[in-house]
Picture 1 (cartoon, one colour):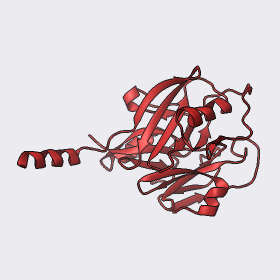
Picture 2 (cartoon, rainbow, N blue to C red):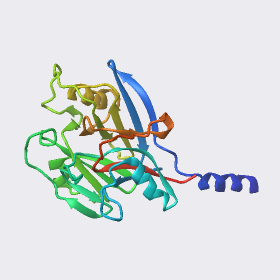
Picture 3 (cartoon, rainbow, N blue to C red):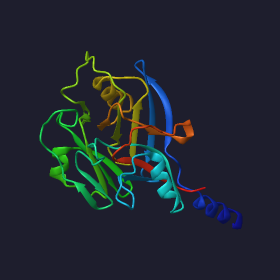
Picture 4 (cartoon, rainbow, N blue to C red):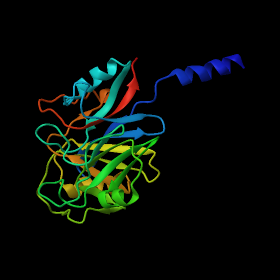
Length: 245
């Protein structure tokens, strides 16, 4: 009995499991895919440090967390941003709103409607098409808006073309219907929107998925030896917070 109790206590003392990252090839395109279990892992958004300056790089977020006895595990950029690193669309971080929801059509990928919102709540994450988000008004702890949507209720974005020649490095996120898992992907080769959306719909089997960004996209996956270091500073960042070891 004592041995069983000691084993249980030891297991409880272990840090939450890290996001599971893997490399896959789908339809001749290479991807890195990271799955986050929201029932076991702490997924957070990061924009600015205590001095109000944008973190810009994963290493800066990790350094800030280390002061709290924590560390940054998996991470990626979390949406489009202006030159000053401020978010283009809706951005909410731990109850503080930095930008309102943007609904108008416009130039660039963000304005390729419909776009969407990634909403983080207690032990769950959900991707909403923007109009659905406004109608439902979920009680998000944190949220980030980007665009375009990749998959909308099981369908590809209506403006994606199978024979498109526009190929870039792209990253995005999809969520399961029950909100328990958020699955992030970044292409390791240049891909079209159609190919990237198909990855989320047909390979990852996700009902809703959201494009995060293109050429500036970076991914931190320590277990794969990827630090995500780059010269260009990022705007919003999303990542898993782990206990320092």
